[in-house]
Amino acid sequence: MAVLKIVKLGDPVLRQPTEPVTKITKKISRLIQNMIETMYAADGVGLAAPQVGVSKKIVVIDVGDGPIVLINPKIVSGSGEDIDVEGCLSIPGKQAYVKRMAEVVVEALDGEGKPIKIEGRGYLARALQHEIDHLNGILFIDLVDEKDIFSEGDE
Ligand code: NI
Image 1 (cartoon, rainbow, N blue to C red):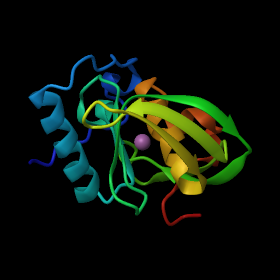
Image 2: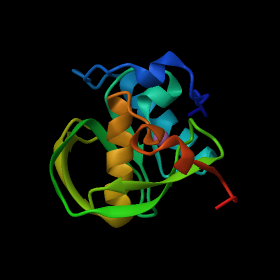
Image 3: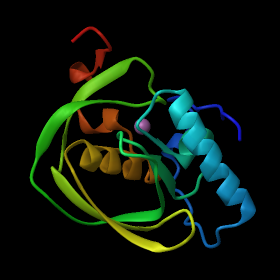
Image 4: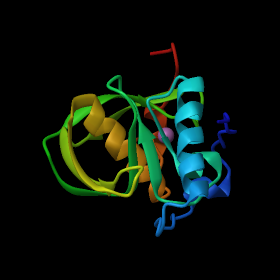
């Protein structure tokens, strides 16, 4: 396994719409393992493939309950509203309070290509929405006023 380089704000790959994964090849499996390792090395709770320069619909998340791998994820329903602080490994040092749905249901394939359905609430719901946004070229800073973005530790 390997720790990959995380691309930063300004890299066009972060703004490109991603391609769905059609087959879970060895190369894709290796990418997923490396994404998990990269997320842990960076002390993050989630990472999307564009953040390592790969424009594909792959996300890894770990909000403390072990790694979740989502391939071609889709939010199929959501409800409620929740505002909490958010950051992004591609925008180091910056944070903002972002309004998200409090609960979401996501359908995807897992790392083996098996269909899964995840019901996320609280911080997991937030991570799911943040990471799936990445697959559509959307960053958390797009969802808030520029004046509401602050530097970490500056709150
Ligand atoms: Ni992010």
